[in-house]
Image 1: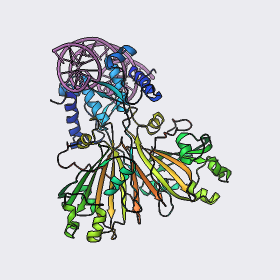
Image 2: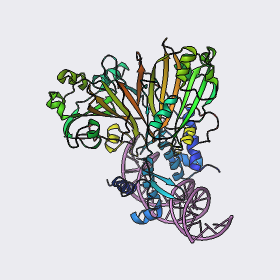
Image 3: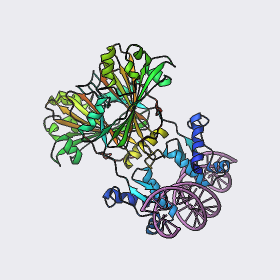
Image 4: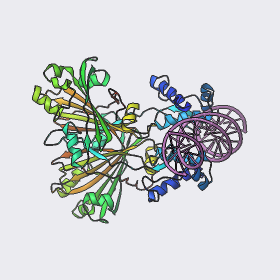
Length: 276
Length: 276
DNA sequence: GCAAATTTGTTCGTATGTATT
DNA sequence: CAATACATACGAACAAATTTG
């Protein structure tokens, strides 16, 4: 019946965090002090701290202590297209514009460009045979110096042969690849489809975003297929966002206003909660 | 320099999972067997299993063993509006239609309806004074018997006074509350804004969705504000989705096709990964 | 239905290593 | 270099959940 000791300690610490007695950034008592405070063994207080760590409430730093997590100021990426530019999901210059509008500092180093062969999902979504050459353009994006997202786009090599040669150049394409394709070869993007998933980051993403290695912070992945006027897919863009510092917005209908940052509401489940 | 022992054990087990040697649903060796197999103490083996647990690769069941996670078949909810019905994000009948279209079985018990007072975010987003009465309608949704999402809508009581009395009734409003408001009091929803976040589930959500208690599986939260022709917000809908069994889709542009389920691509970071 | 065996969960103690101040 | 703090690793015992005989 009674909760295990480590949970009682964790719950008590969590209450102190919720109440503000332990503010974001504050240092918890050390393991030895917690051990005395709760008359538990060091392993048990470590279990309590680990529980809070998995829940994303605290982080431990070797040699320093355990600290209450300071949630990063979230950045909102608008997936639906801007009515003026047609850009959405932080494509091209839209990213820097959206970031500056919030009074924050964007940084987008030169994209990495390479040619590889489409396999699996890439080939299937672009409706090209497995092994067909594709241009891969990868853009890293930073906000206020912190890594924010990684965008990887796949274009069939056929587009380059049709005259869109700048796709192969290493520099940024301003204001965006979509505008360039329209200007260069008359390719019109008439619609796109985004699919959003949440998953555990892989090792490279963990490293890039500076996430904890155990994978307790997840990433968003948006999977965008863009179609031309012939209803053919001509671009696949995969964007990966660290979930602890990003939100997504979608506007449907007339005259989109600006997205507002949203705190979580956590609506209470009404009535009895255990009938499922 | 060498990786700690528990990580080496975890990595080896993870490789076996990746390679398929340990298929989804398979039972791992017991802790005692792993202890012999890797010549490590039971605690060290448990650390390895915990690592995989946090990463979402395995789950432990007391008295039974440790099993490779079987990822649930994801369900895709389309946030953008259906061009025919104007419904989006699984509103009203759109949910059951979208589920059936996938050959799966929807279940939506009667919504819970109650009147409470708007505070904080709810009041601010609906632009009504703190403490104003609101109708709260909460809908639980199941797919193939498994809890899938919880939708909570807040309507200003003023709508009821204007004649939309069915908002207070406990039954489902078919085909949806939006159509009803248009028919009953001429209220037209001309646009909405969704904001999507990922967070740790609270206790009630953990219980409803049957998620692990340590909060390692996160939830999506979509925050929808709907506006009428006067550009006034008249509805706030918060939907919470278990992130391990849901994906979201957004269509932008002409003639949305059907969303396709997407496996994660995990695009490799090109070039050196450590310049951040 | 019950008892035994198996398996994970909790808690303690102890020792040593590594990172930071 | 010393002190402090967290990380890793071992051993041991008992509890709780589940399956098996």
